[in-house]
Image (cartoon, rainbow over all chains, first blue to last red; front, side):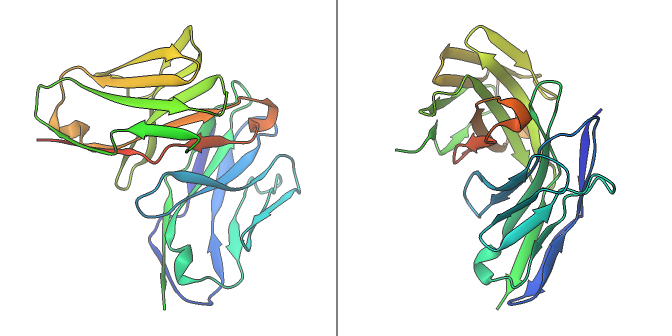
Amino acid sequence: GDSVTQMEGPVTLSEEAFLTINCTYTATGYPSLFWYVQYPGEGLQLLLKATKADDKGSNKGFEATYRKETTSFHLEKGSVQVSDSAVYFCALSSLSNYQLIWGAGTKLIIKP
Amino acid sequence: DADVTQTPRNRITKTGKRIMLECSQTKGHDRMYWYRQDPGLGLRLIYYSFDVKDINKGEISDGYSVSRQAQAKFSLSLESAIPNQTALYFCATSDGGVAGGRGYTFGSGTRLTVV
């Protein structure tokens, strides 16, 4: 069945560092791919999405490119801020019923 | 008002008590979901509903039940709460469109503690 694998956290970086959070997936066909963010004490919010191969989703300085050849959707940001500290979830939309299949989440800690 | 509203935000209850968590949405979406979040375990799907008459079990439905009272309302019940049901519970809604639509919209969560 469909699945999503994320790098384990926590990931700890200093402010202004470059961020990569790895996400790979297993699915049939071409699912849509998503990144969600959960700030402390809050629900999940959609951060960005991509719906087909080679699409790049972007928002708030974060980017992720849909790579069909490597079945990956890695999240990147060039210069992180303390306010980016949160848990980040990668997900795919199952083509069988359009439900989201979730990764386990990666906690990001940014130190000033 | 928030697109998805969950009540209560926090609840402490005793083992064996029945408790209901409520969710309402103003997105006009047909699909609604209940998830449970435990530290280090990500999100696990409890129940989901594609419309008022269509309710389905998720991966961890044992010990839970749901009611879809209207398109906008989806309640989760713990018939007899136990301590390992202590967790953060989220309700979400989606339009279920092709290619995942515009994703899910989540409520702010209910933190449930069973003592």
